[in-house]
Length: 537
Ligand SMILES: [Zn+2]
Image 1 (tube, rainbow, N blue to C red):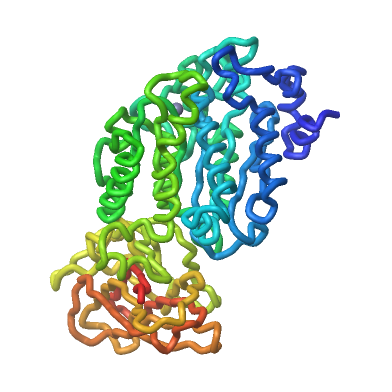
Image 2: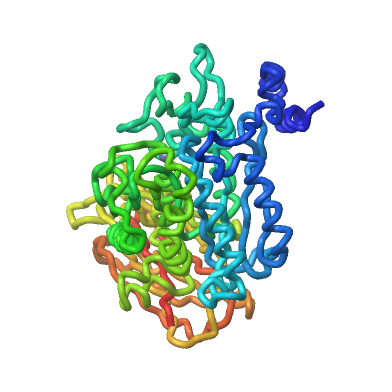
């Protein structure tokens, strides 16, 4: 049994494997000998594998390779990690580079190989790169879509092949556009097609391609302690000499699934990189609208500051252009790795203090908060939900807010309005949600800051409350650091800022527990919070 077939059997795809023609199940037989004349400086799949193997063998303390899965035809997809103490998963900001998602864009693979060489060759010889490798964990995916790339050069001439090599049911048309197959706004508007014969065929469903699933699963594997470790990323395409930031799926600069801070910082970083490369900076949709792309998925799901670079002026640049077309992006690549410590830091000193500390959660995406962690919650209705609140209003005023302080989501006691203000408020007791662990530096002047709202009606009692506690794992203590409670008078929704000194917890590992309680009967209680931060000392 071939290794490929065994792998497919192991993943439960027996039926599929048996339907594959022999040439597909044995990729080695389909391996391209080399690029056409004038392009032999580009790496075939086999040459790339050999280069990666040589680099990790020569630099075992700072470079490791790992498989992140297999292509449709069974080729191993290699990722290289570069960092000091490379065998350890250290608490360092992470960065991701990938290329060759479109298999006729071979410069993308060359770009990722160059980055790998810059980092391992520069380590110990240039201060800047030594600092980068010591303080970051850099991931490089070497060729997302090798099946397409090998086919593109098969027979000694180019086939202008962009998609993967996966057959499509009910048609002889081969392949899916992997950069339309990601599961964020998949199937939306713009240059994405439901026709299997189209070069922008999106696939029958999101993540129908193993190539997109490999990247998806790798990204998911970098969620540690509820939080995505990768902060910045570039996916390399060609051509056009462009730097593009999210989103591609809409012409809106700041749609509901992007915050104003993120938009401004994405553009600042993108414009800076473009200036150093001599590229044109723009929002991805300024080129044309696309849906289901790598970049939109990385930002939309994880808030990774993800960019698409379109390399080169022309398609199929000859190999003499590899050094200059990759080299012109070296400064941009190093800059983005450095920015990974806190991309929002480009917004200035005030934002740097507020948002580059030990914790920063605008609650726009899932970052590891856990409901009812100790199993003692008693609320029967209106438990904490992270979402977009629907407003509720009584004759006395607004009880559940319509808007949140940033973006579109906050934690709210039951986001739905229900049939009346009293229908979906908090009832029956206490609801809790607890943050992931936060390792506070030992420095002074760290503050816990968050926005909060608490509303009640005239039936409220003192036991109705919004409470924030610090669960200190270092001292095994629980400390209430914020409390507001009900009174028998009307209190309407409104967002307020809390700022709490964390000096007592400096150097400790803590979690934050937000709890809301309805202790009385027939009282109306609504609570919410957003923008939870530990400020930078
Ligand atoms: Zn492309």
